[in-house]
View 1 (cartoon, helix red, strand yellow):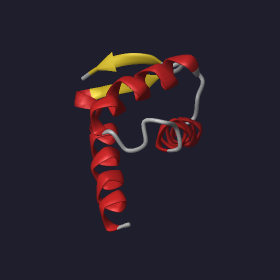
View 2 (view 1 turned 45 degrees about the vertical axis):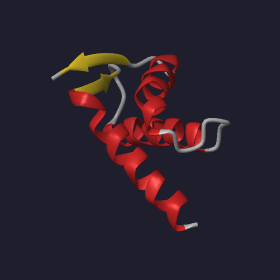
View 3 (view 1 turned 90 degrees about the horizontal axis):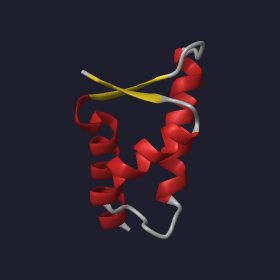
Amino acid sequence: MKIKLMLTAVLLVSVAGCAGTNFVKPGVTQQQAEQDKSECIYSFLNGPWGTNPLMAKGLMKSCMKAKGYQEEKQ
């Protein structure tokens, strides 16, 4: 249980940073953007890949793009 919690924390930190990438979508409030981001995190934490931090970045990008967001490098 502790290992899964630790892996989840590592995953969330890696996704939150996402190597300096922001996701933008015109007309979306900050609250909606945070909700969409949370939904993406939830979807891959509960998928077959579990808490694999190596897949987190690519899955986050795919999910956010599917929701209509574009990447904005910082």
